[in-house]
Length: 171
Image (cartoon, rainbow, N blue to C red; front, side):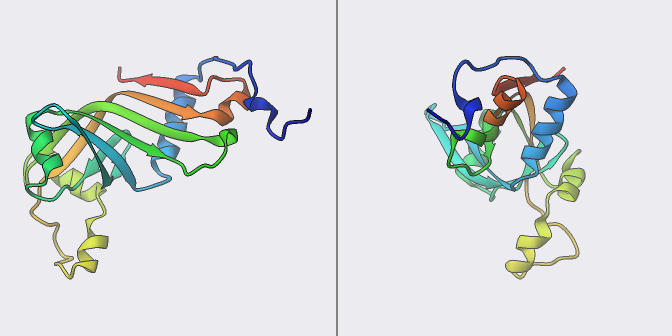
């Protein structure tokens, strides 16, 4: 029998990518989209997953949640978060994404790190759509997620002789 994608048939390789190459691929995946699914924990300990617009600076991910939103309230009480970014796919031949496990840092307006985050976050796009001032960033709380661990998944790596799941850890 002939298979169109022979690399998706077992046995699967499990070789690790060199760290620099893994970081390059994670960075590339983060730049494929500007929305992720952010997972937080409610005050009752239930997981809550929310689609969120993000922009990254290296592996730091910035998002601008609405004031008083449940996700912001949850992150203020528990900084442990997970987020996922993935490429659309309809075949096992090239499923690709990243899953972050890290800490959310809540940055109120003008706090240390807020200005840099607002330089990274492309707030002017939605501010223009909403008819808001484009000359200065909104005085809104920003969230920065810094990963402790990233799971990178790319089934195309099998074709290159590497494991489809790769783990990056902060040093």
